[in-house]
Length: 150
Image 1 (tube, one colour):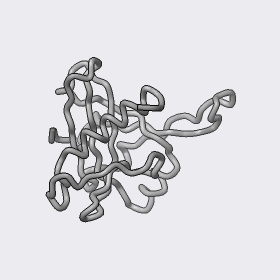
Image 2: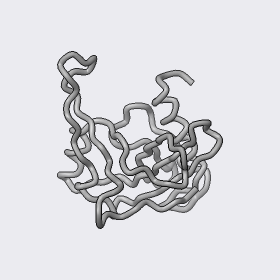
Image 3: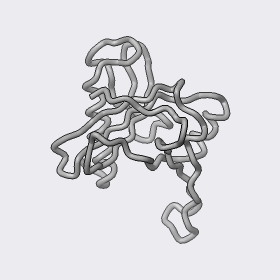
């Protein structure tokens, strides 16, 4: 598996989600990984076209949802939120030894713009100076919680 440690972890999470049936059409073995750097989505159903995003994190206790997750580029996400477009979200929690995992799901219609918070741009000396990501907050009061699906 090439790439950074985070990229390899993300690949493991996406691969785990592809073992689930499609949440929309309910067919098994139809979820496929999209190419790297596809904007705002990681998984597609090759039967019904369902798109979803996958976030993978390392957790000491996979049965506990993380309070927040780091997201990718802010601008494409913000443009979609302004247009009212949200992608369903799978969260894969993996133990540090990678022997256990839990998969959680949050449908698009239960997401809100408040969950997605813009981070500070990278410093001028960073390799990708000025790039801005986001933080996905799962601990906001009154927010919907993802449910465990795997």
